[in-house]
Image 1 (cartoon, one colour):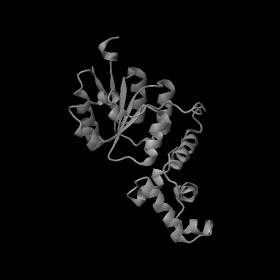
Image 2 (tube, rainbow, N blue to C red):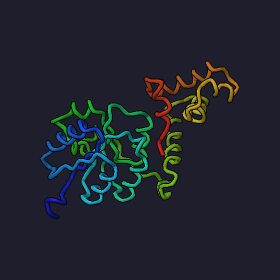
Image 3 (cartoon, rainbow, N blue to C red):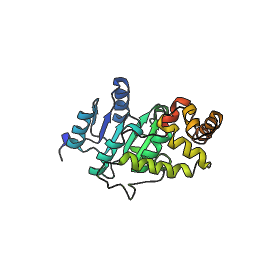
Length: 222
């Protein structure tokens, strides 16, 4: 294979400053022959097909690109993906776990390891990779119900984290759909204080610090 096609890193970010920073970070890796950057999704998909990189570095939350990851996984089942953000939510971690070989790195954490650990090193160091997960048994569904499948997996994961069954039910069945607590209280015939209490339980157990992150933490975009 010639050097033009030996691209090993594909970096994607709509933010120019972040894109340049990630490119410079990846170029420090002597094992890489080239780093390609994209700022729009169509170009990203084109480059992915054309260059077949060894790994991807994407500046996007996992919860907003589940269908894109599905398409990538369908063609490249074990291609490692690093997603970078200022911070990640529970829904991001559920998506990453569902597909496997998806690593979530916050900006500060990624930069703090440089230059001792370069991007490609994330896939060799178990302290970063963690356990390897691949597709769930129900993965092959033509991509039509990925969000539903991931949401089912999210319910399963919550059972092992949030012990209160009622808090899980109220959060997933009502609050996560964006329904205000006051309306939920009327729907379930309980006081609004009880609904707020259920929400606080889930926020505590999932380490959700900001109320505005609650709905996004329990949702995967279509």
